[in-house]
Length: 343
Image (cartoon, rainbow, N blue to C red; front, side, top):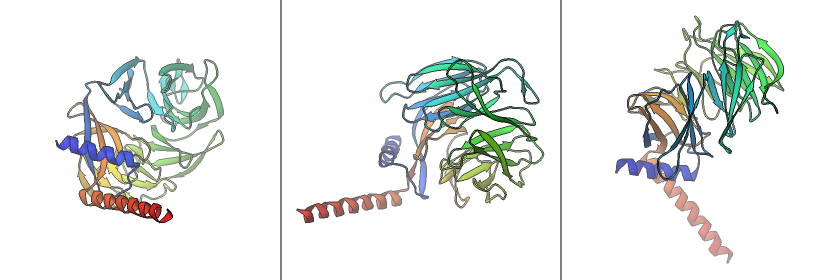
């Protein structure tokens, strides 16, 4: 009964639209057993599809049917990374035969899955394709996985080969994880294994990458790099930065943050107020990856303790929900009065 109540509340809020209330509690809507390995997770709302990357051998496409069990298709391959385009139309993935100081060794490939047609396509790349971040439906940034990271802007080609755009940028950056900030048109790179785990910003200007500011972090050894769903905040390990200015951390959390919306910052087991850093509640699981969809209040995550994909939603607490309902009734009453007055 509790799960049904939570689901009805969450569905009501999803129907209303993106929820923007700091007094929201995170509730479980659905759980799907999944025993495979999960390193990456992405969610496209329009096609209602989850993409599951196991970090090396396959990508699973899980269609979440409204009625009946989800349909599952597994695509085998030595995938090194994946990323969903900002529109959600395409999932991009990479496979690298190896690299030496950022230079390719062996076959380098980029894959693209079309959520509309349900088809995969593959193109070879002359540049190292260890990691990928989608800029839009056609362009993406390729990144090497070794130290002295190389970055390059590329485009899906009309034939069987990726089109190299702009200049390949060679840096002194340690290897790490990147996130593309579509709101500010910047690539954010977080060091994963250096003595000081800094975050570096690269501005995308046309098809060129321009190095900008970097953080002066207190983080030792790096950590997860997370961009909030509204693009306003960046999290690296337990530090929070304003996405437009990485020079100084705005807040330090009690735990590493591995997922974030505009309102909440999520660790593996808790969620915090993103504006204050206050602990708001427990997630009741051991969550390793999250998949958000724009500013919508519901999202997916993987609970390794239960080996389950869990559909969660940030739902206003009872007081907030009642106030919102009264507000909607007031709006409806006002509109009704206006209609009567106009007759």
